[in-house]
Image 1: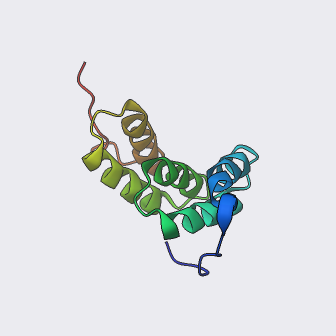
Image 2: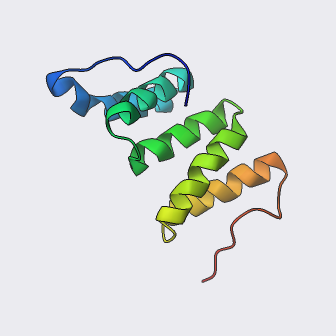
Image 3: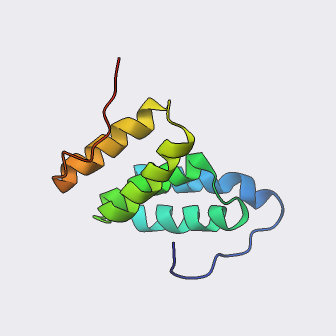
Length: 106
């Protein structure tokens, strides 16, 4: 998603990056979480777990259009994931765009 080039991680360090991104998100260090997600996506593009976390970080930093774009793409690939639909609906609501929000049929 732009910014600085990804750092190079060797060996076992890669397997801890998602946990680092998640913990940074939980501690509300959204910029660090997004940066770590970018690092992961440099070697594992399209990872849905990472993209979902990144969308949350982007939304938390008022980058709602970018967050919505990521979740719309995830929704196309994982239409049955309620978490994606729920967050997408919340993001549209925060933006005041009630017409575009996803509709869930039960």
